[in-house]
Length: 449
Image (cartoon, rainbow, N blue to C red; front, side):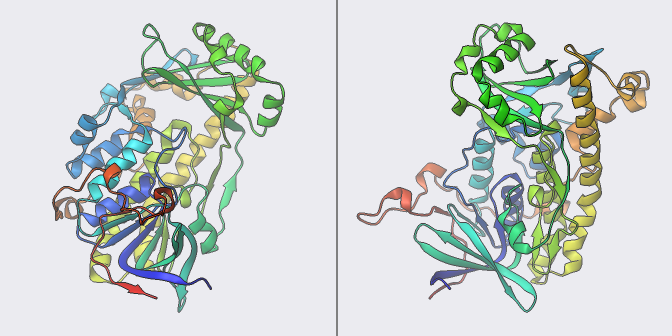
């Protein structure tokens, strides 16, 4: 057993400051519920994280007065429609949605997470600990009582009434819980890379198909962020063939990129995502709840990962805030979160799985646009059905609204310094990069050991 430097005590310990964890911590802290948020990394910067902020997320933020500030403070691009590369073309026109936010906002996820955690830090019940690697769960009398984590300065514990695993598709908390996922096979992987964007290029999001690949191009201002589907497990062979065939494929599918594909000059510019989909049969055990990709890994298709993660967080806050305030969390409370969120998740995973298999089959048959499925060709002719795919992408199958009780409860304190200014001062001779970052300490009990 390692020596523990200190013990934090709190109502809720959230592991993972991704979209699910940051949103849940914010919703709890603004109600005065003591919350510790543990993040394993030193910052939020990652390549090719999901950057799509869907109308459902914007509406959740609007309920707590943050949507307009988010859009005013963070650079973003708005996707008002998306045209799928089918024959005939299939267009999702978000302007038809009954919402204040008839678009998908493209915001770098790192900036989005900084925004959420900076807002949470305005409340005295919130604490963010960066570079906190959770190594074990504290279990006593058949219940999870918190987590043991390591920072550059040593070992620590946080003891909590509820521990929430929101640490993504490679969740350490999931592994430690002993709950095994049910996986479904996926036929594709995705490679990501960037190419220069020019002023006369098309705006927004584009998609093209050809040579057995689907290319999705996201407008990032001065760059295109490009996703290219490849058959499952084929990346080693693709890399062994060299960059020139990949450059040729890109230029063949999108001819107006031909004069810049040589900017992709090193495999270090390419990131590969193994597309996966799974779910836990049970999202909880006494004292522990898993949400977001920790509970159900979503395919990146349609931006469902971030959308469903944030909605899991909203549902958890709606259901668990009162029990947390009362100091009693039952298994029944945790099961209620899974019941609320499980069926939309499972149906969405099934729809995406069928769509991806159909996509792969279509790509194998044609070099040009794939023929739209019969259902998509019929939808525009039936007014009350035509917006179903649109609503599914924008809101998911069961949109979560922040409850009035959660939205109204807010105990704000004075603004805190900008995130870049909040790192604790170093001891003499102690390099800054070797210290954990702690933000906005809550009034919790700390016991030295």
